[in-house]
Image 1 (cartoon, helix red, strand yellow):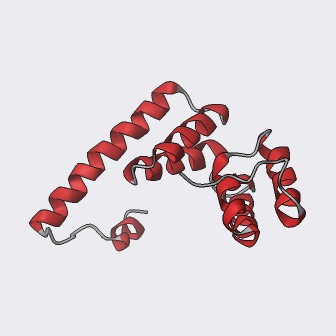
Image 2 (image 1 turned 90 degrees about the horizontal axis):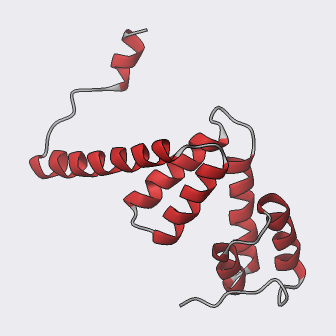
Length: 134
């Protein structure tokens, strides 16, 4: 198991980033504590990415971003990330039904991906088709 840098042990850059994370989430999740224990610069890099991609206004709302993060986490079989993003999605307004439907979509397309790859199915659906349908 990875070493976690506790909030009490954090100094310098790690402490400053932990304060930002805590202000955003009300806590410092263990994934950030693990990164800080390895390299505070790595923690900072990934925290800035979270701020830019997950926490800033964009074309997708926070709930949608968290449901996508949940789907990726399920597909990658990351238990920590799946639980964290399920919780974050619920906190961002997702319903249990939306979370469960996300699970169903992941399962369906994990299966379809395996079928398409194992049969080496050539793709006949392209982005150009979307442009023509508008």
